[in-house]
Image 1 (cartoon, rainbow, N blue to C red):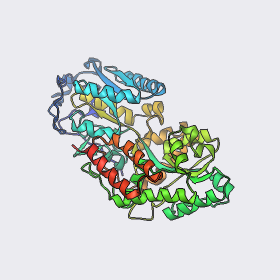
Image 2: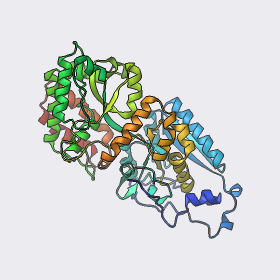
Image 3: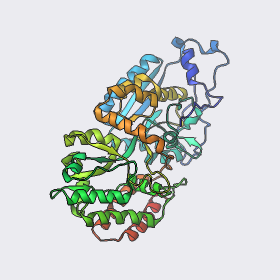
Image 4: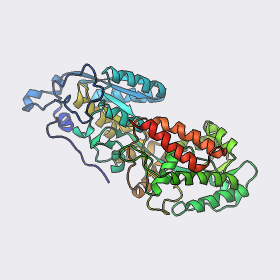
Length: 459
C-alpha cells in the first residue's frame, strides 16, 4: 500500500512553492530554550502562512535567502555523498543554503543531546528508531504530517515505523529486511537438500541445520547462534501474534514465548547444529571476516539484507537470501520492513517550509537517488529504488529484489520502541550468554529480561 500526499490547509504547499519559484518571506522565531517536557503535538512554533497573492511572494530570485542546518552521522564516504546532495539541492534552490553538521555514530548522539538541551536542534536531522520516541516526547521533533512531503511512493508499513501518538516524527530514508543468509555450497558439500524458504517451519529448519552439521567436516555447522539479537526475537514474537514493545512502549510479550526461543538455541547447540557456547560468544563479537558464514563454516545465519554485499565479498562466493522459518506456520508473518534511518525536522526550526522541501528532495528526487544510491538503505521511495537498480552491485540488486518479493507478505510495522530502548540490547546479550553457559534457565532469564527492560524504559 502507498501513502498519498498529506498536508494541512493552512501551511504553505512545498509543491506550489517549487512551481511558483518562491518561498515565504518570513517564518517563526526560534525559541530560546526548549521546555523540559513540552507537549509533543504543540505546533505553536509553526506560524508561517501563505501570502495573500502571488505578487506578494515575488519571483524566486527575490526569495529571501535562508540557511538550514542538516545533521547526520556516518563515514567519510557518507559525508561526501551528503555534500554532493547538498550541492545539487542548492543548485536547484539557490535561495536555501544547507549547512552540514556531521560526526560519527557515538559522537552524534552526544552532540545532539547537547544541542537540543540548549534549544539549538538542527533544522533537519537523521534519526534512528530507538531514539525517535525519546526526542519526539521531549518536543524536539516536528509532526511531518503538517507539511507537504510526498509519501505516495513509500509503503505504508514503512511510513508507520515513524508514526506514534497520532503524528509522524521521522520518515524512513531506506529499507532493510531481516533474512537468513545461506551458503548453498555448504549444504551441497554436506549432501543436504537446500530448504524451500516459502514453506519451511522451525522444525524443518532445525532438521536441515542438524543434517548439515552431522555431514560436514569438524568446525562446520548448520547455523550460527542468534539468541542475543532483538530483531530475531521480534520476528519470533510477531509470528505468534505478540510484539517486543506494545503501542504504549511497554513489554508486549509473554515470558514463556521468550523462554521457548532461548530453549531453541540450547537445543541447536546440544544437537551440534550450532557451535558450542564459548565459540558462539567469541564469534558474536568478531567482525565480518570472523563470522562463520564468511569463512564457509555455517550453512545459514541471520543478518539484514544490506549485509549481503559485505558478507559475499568476505566469503568469496555467492550467498543466498532466505525467508525466516515459521513465516507460514503460526498466526501471521513476523518479518517487517526495517527503516535504515529516518529524516526528522526540529519543531522549533525558523524555516519549516524550507526544511520540509529539503526532506522531500532527499526522499523523492531522482537526483538524490543517483547520488545516495543505497547508502541510507535501499531507497524507501519505490520509484527511486527502481530508477537506481542498474547502478547497484549484484548483491544490492539481489537484496532489492528480495525486499520487493517479501513486502506483500508483511502484515504491518512494529510499534516504535520506547525511550531507553537503545540500552536494552546489552541486557539481552548478557542474559543470552548466561543461558548458553547454563547459569540461568530460559524462563528465569526471560522474566529477568522483562523486569530489567521495563525498568530501563519506564518513566
